[in-house]
Length: 304
Image (cartoon, rainbow, N blue to C red; front, top):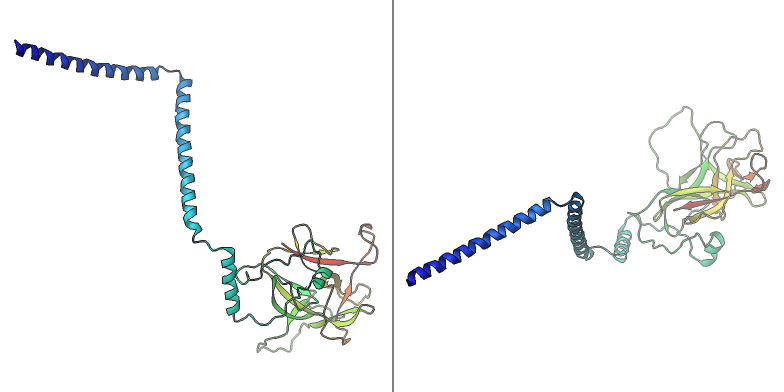
């Protein structure tokens, strides 16, 4: 009798467990059926919410990775100060770091020749050699700005005023020429030193030049008719526009050059070879105003 009661109790427990399992299966089937019976718009909304949550999680995970690796790399990045110190050491050890003349930084010289709004003298010149841009010729001077490098200085040279042929451009000849072994008796081209011919200003002055390399800027432009540069550009130097004379029939055409307004000279002998004259603006096709008939034209070399 007791055995039958125990057996029946166990049987009832098994039946209850089976019923519970079947109910769970039925509920799951109902949920799946309900989802399948859901309207398409509601399905898309549900899927969209799930995808959006996943994207947000991935986004924050990516931000965390970037912040982590940025923090690790920061410890190995050279600061500007460290980089400048390295460049100073390189420049001091460089064999070609000869005693070149540099432009004075006195306030009187800077203020009289450069516009204070465009002349930037705050650059650290220790970042040289490996960083730099194009070169330009500074006609009339043997020095360059403090934040540029003097490649070399020399003598302004060009064709003789009454010679046909040769080049129409002017060259900055080195003070230390090197020679090859070739010789010829054939037709040749000739170069002469350049003089400025202006009796009341600079009569027969032989003019030097220097080749300057930009260290912190990468674009150059010479603007005729200006003494200052556009906004965000730096004045390399300003001066006067010069070329061969246009008043004599036997003069040959040459290029225009911008000669520094505080030109130097290395001689005063009147050899009458290659000659520079001031350039005037003449009204007619050239509108006046803004130009003034017969007024000497200025020029400025700008960098950025």
